[in-house]
Image (cartoon, rainbow, N blue to C red; front, side, top):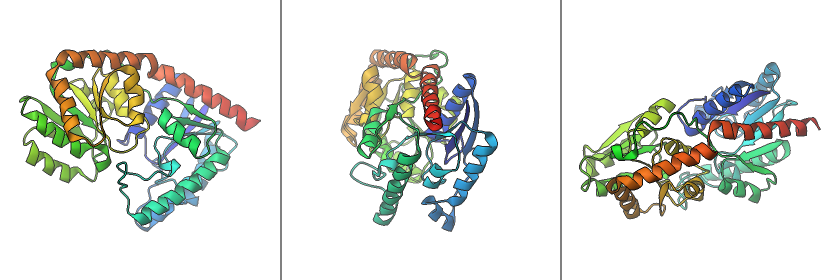
Length: 366
């Protein structure tokens, strides 16, 4: 098959979905497919940000690229913040497939649950854009995939009737070189935004740090809260929190291989959590918030301690438990690794994605 992957940001840009695109492309090519990207090609700046709502130029360019490539499948990912919903209507006879990676398309406001990040006017504009995008997607898509049950259920509530749950996946690679018990580092990987629970994590780690003199919190990522977070870390846990910019897959895996646990204390709605799959693949236990999207894999695998969203005391207790009990950390890490090998490897999931593509092609030609 000839597959065109469409996304706002370029593959490998740093975010989880961009890394996912690289894995998807590698897996499809290994299965014999031909893959091209239409990703990172459009960036709206200044007054052009108004084109986030509707960009006819992006639609025309995607139509041209689709024809030149001879795509049999156009696989849309995140397109609402740069390419705009206009690209859903690009002119092509190819099958259209959509993977919904977040709750934007359902119209749910972005930010911590109960505390949207956007002011009222942008929030209303994004809700209107979501309604427009849903309307086009409902008419134009031949197949819709969701990485977890929570987002699949949300899509069904807004009118999508045939949603296939296809989980995120990882190139499992070799077994971890060292067990979690060999380290006392706590690792966070993600965008440095308030909705990721990173403020709560720094405060929770500061409470635990006195009991674990050698422990560090390693924060990997970039975002608008970076300066404020560094200031908080300097006040509450001086010399114990290390910040690094966003890393590629190999860099993230290397840090996971040297950590005791990976924390994902998100306070927003997550669809499944790519970092959670990566951590489990590295044999590292998780501390996660009680978000349904995060819990779906972790509960089934038995690889995480779950804490209430935004609860600093519970988060600190969970971190302390895994730092204090290396045997438990090793057991949970091994359980996560086994679950990934059984259900979340590239080979397993790519086969399902190609089934979806084939069905979508048949539908488009009917």
